Amino acid sequence: MRARVFITPKKGVLDPQGKAIEHSLHALQFTEAHDVHLGKYVELTLEGSDRDRASRRLDEMCRKLLANGVIEDYRFELEE
Amino acid sequence: MRWGVVTFPGSNDDHDTLYALDHVLGEEVVSLWHKERDLKQVYCVVLPGGFSYGDYLRCGALARFSPVMEAVIEFAHAGGLVFGICNGFQVLCEAGLLPGALVRNRSLRFVCEAVHLRLEEAETPFTCRCTPGEVLTIPIKHGEGCYVADAATLDQLESNHQVVLRYVDASGRATEAANPNGSLNNIAGIVNARRNVFGLMPHPEHASEKIQGSEDGLKLFRSVLAAYDEREHQRMASVAPGH
Image (cartoon, rainbow over all chains, first blue to last red; front, top):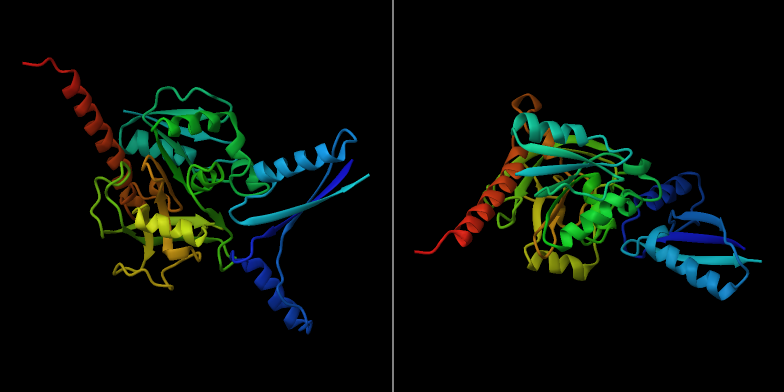
């Protein structure tokens, strides 16, 4: 089973990279772009076919390692 | 007393720390490889600066799961002294031994310079030879040293007197201009509530000889020695035969 994990800075945590990207977009005249945040994207393949179990295990992976709950939020998608 | 200095793959200030403790202070010090689980009965474990595991995923995130860290976490929970410098501070936050996190400098630039630090707390084993309010000069060199924590954690750190070092100007004022990385409340170093785990972004091992421009870092290492002597003194007193 293929999984995609999206990790983003928590709201309220300083995100200087997002800010810098936003400034550059504005400099390029993409002035409609706001609230830019830079995160991480992780792809992985999971053994087994039980989606509930995969979901639980992925959540645990995110909490234990892939994201730091102090500064980051996460969400994930599972594909067949 | 015996010190231990951990080496993770990617640590690069481990030998500078070994040098400061061994050659400058003349202390007994052992090197602890990241795959070891035996801390060799050290009194204080130092997690050094560097780029453990290449800083992959997040600074300190992978080091936190190395075998030696299991032993360090157990050691800390038993009251052992843990001294995390720069990447070591990041590892301690990732391991949950210290609150908060260290993120990319607000300037997005790597900073490498000597900074002024105000000593806020002398009632810790890491600062007991310092004077509250004194200004130390110690270098920093990091890209991810901006200390962040939620408002409740920050309040708790301040009210429990866990903020040990703050970035200040030469006259000791914690101004915005004196903050090199955007850290909340100009925080440069903290201890846990039990005061046996210390993390700081500045590098005391790089301020331990005159040739480095400052010897202020030694005050922190010497504090640990004083804390050890105090403990030994108390232990001797408690086992001395009564009269």
